[in-house]
Length: 59
Image 1 (cartoon, rainbow, N blue to C red):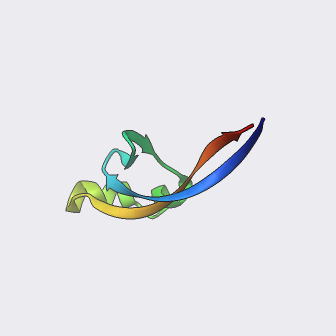
Image 2 (cartoon, rainbow, N blue to C red; image 1 turned 30 degrees about the vertical axis):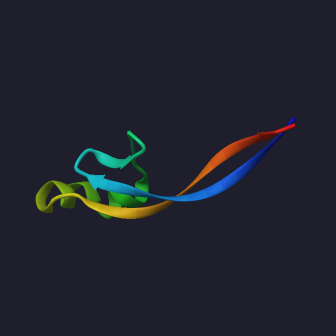
């Protein structure tokens, strides 16, 4: 069996608690530095496109 990565595009929501995508919260240094979570707390949440990868098992 071999693993292959598949790229997909989705929509995440920037909230005061983090980047919400598929029911989970994410963060990284760049968005903390840009103070996106502080901005979401003050002005409300917004949506962003995200690229994510899934692993596909092939025989």
